[in-house]
Length: 537
Image (cartoon, rainbow, N blue to C red):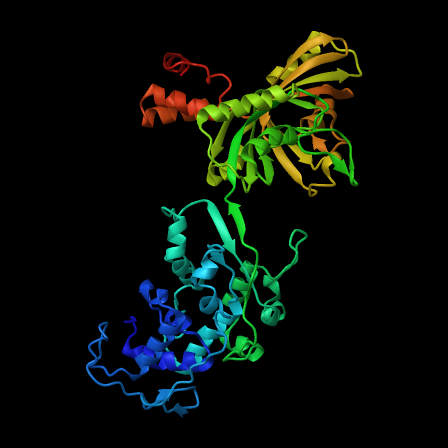
């Protein structure tokens, strides 16, 4: 027997009169007994109708049986005090047409013939569901004002019926609920395609066009608008009960999709003619290849992915090398056809990338979680980087002219957005810190400059001043025109040794500390043994 209660009878009658199918009646009555939905749609409707005529003493009604016979003489129908007479003997208006709530999905697409075509998620029409909620609220005042009805989710019922079918079980030996592999089942209904368009005028802030979206009427936008709009405004724009549809939903092609795989590591760039990402200006490619493409090529081939999204902790200019411990990067591989690799296969994949080109080298390649990828850019303000630059001076210099540089500590620099990146970054003044510097004399017009700076410092602009947009700058400090000829990133970020000492105090165990240091890829400590770390601290 269906898990319906006596208090559900007026709801059942109203939903049947409105044109809901048997399964949708159960959903809006919050029936959580999933075996009820596995009955055929004909049996489900028959049992729902039978519920209206059951006496409270009927032994088949086992859940919360009332002590008296059902009495449905009067029910509130609105604020005007009007009443609606419903008797237990009155015949409900059982609709044989298409369900107004699910548009026929739970009527015609939950049988074995459709199950064989495939499974998993269904796109349903949110305004239709919203109408059904308001229908219940408006006619019966079923809940406390301001409290939402928690009906059983449409998609959950669809999946439940499909997954419990004997046809599906014959194809599957077991089911993994949390699998990253998805089989998406979509439905379209041309007749109600424009039902949600009125939301764009009533909740315009929820439908903002973007260059990457083909339509503003996305799933999340419609959900947000339905949560925001008042019931009164919704009813003034949409009929309730809804108009009976003349046609059923049409199933779309089934799509197979695997959740993205995230892979991370560090890269070194040895070429001064290689951009980090494809360099395209006005539709014309300026340079062949990029760091992104050299890394992505073997990954896409091995994972058999449809595409990728590349990100890194900062970026270097095309003419800047990245040496030392390398720059952290992460890549999202979209819809991979192979998602599982063991450590040996990942090492082999890393070697394949490194042998494919002498312009880059990858290290510490590993599969990570989405959350770990998001943490890559955390703490940018606390990171520091080490640079090495070849400097030219217009005025002849001697060794003594460079002595003052090593005495500069914690120099605060105000940098306006450089002219060379102003087309892609907003105009602002950013304060950065030069923690320390040292200089090595080469000849009367050249010297090597080593800098230890806060991450995000524009080194080229600090050297030549960028027409006075960076203050102070090396030109002003040396009282001479200077320029930068070559720049290398030596260490992409360093670890505060004091923090490591604190961690050691709270988490004794040198082996654990070595693992911690290796996880950060500290340039100076990564190769040390436990005894070496103890000596260093």
